[in-house]
Length: 110
Length: 115
Image (cartoon, rainbow over all chains, first blue to last red; front, top):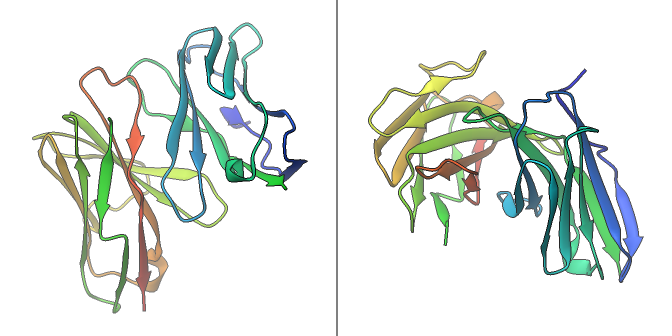
């Protein structure tokens, strides 16, 4: 079993829809949770960073962490074609290295 | 803030030659830098972690004599692919974290093609 599980998709939704992306994990010691967006042939761009459980909102993006269920989510409201990318969840325990999910390929259709 | 650059963005070289890739943190001091490799439609694979002034720590299965990493200053790390072969062709991405090491900021990546 992988430490971090993420459905690779592809996920295709119409413009304006609410997108829900998720990851599950097995290591209860993970404390830091991140979502990265990666456009084709580009490096990952940090979208959201959360420490421990709770919600965090930044514009159209909301990150949720449920440590009791070992489940994290990223919601995108009013999705735009420019949101089409691969979304990677990542997490780590203390100062340890990041553990990435496989990435979900998302397409927003105009 | 938190901008990381990489140079070159693309490089094509002949088999047997060496290629150096630079990673720079432009607006913060990177106490730790990381080098990743990414194959098409796959997630990032960590190759090595380097701290300024120290030898890099390589992940299992990564040849340290083939992938030379130098982290000479708080803003610069280099990855040298020595005696490159076609199977080394890949997308190489660096990332950097500051003294608080809360998260990593990634560079734009370098696409290497070995002919």
